[in-house]
Each structure stands twice: as C-alpha cells, then as structure tokens.
Image (cartoon, rainbow, N blue to C red):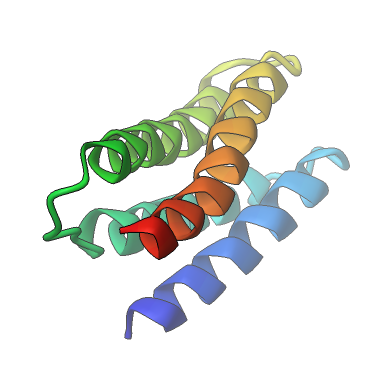
Length: 108
C-alpha cells in the first residue's frame, strides 16, 4: 500500500509541477494531492533501528516532505514563481536522503 502511495504521489507531484508552468487552474491542487500522498507514505514509513544517522536522515526526509506540501500551499497563495525555490530545497533534501538512507542501512 505504501508503495502505491509513493508512486501515485510522485506522479501527481511531477505532473502538477510541470503543468503549473502552463498556469492551468487545477495544477496546484494536483500537485498538493500528490505532495500529501507522498508525505503520508513517508510519515508512515517507520524506522525501528538504533542508528542515530538513519534517525537523523529520516527527520530530514520528513522536513523534505513538509516542504513539498508547503510548496503546494505557496502555489495556491502566491501569484509568481516563488514556489520554485521551496520545491528546489525540498527536492535536494529528498534526493539526498533517498541515497543516504539505504547506504546507511547497509552499514547497520
């Protein structure tokens, strides 16, 4: 079930962000639904181990998920492209943690 949320949320995130360039009225809502689904999948993905590094990376990953949702809110409230900066920061955090968590899990 979590895998479906990840995939569906990621697809909606991507499509919503790309379509936002065309200023389609429903693009921010599409993005926001994807961000919420993706965030729910990450919040429900628990880590029960003892590794301090993985717990820190998980907190960073949750911050990235929060920033993805915040980006959707900025898309709805701001009229220019300021939301792109928040999306960039969220994407960098998510990308970093998606590589580092499996790397640290192998060590653990």
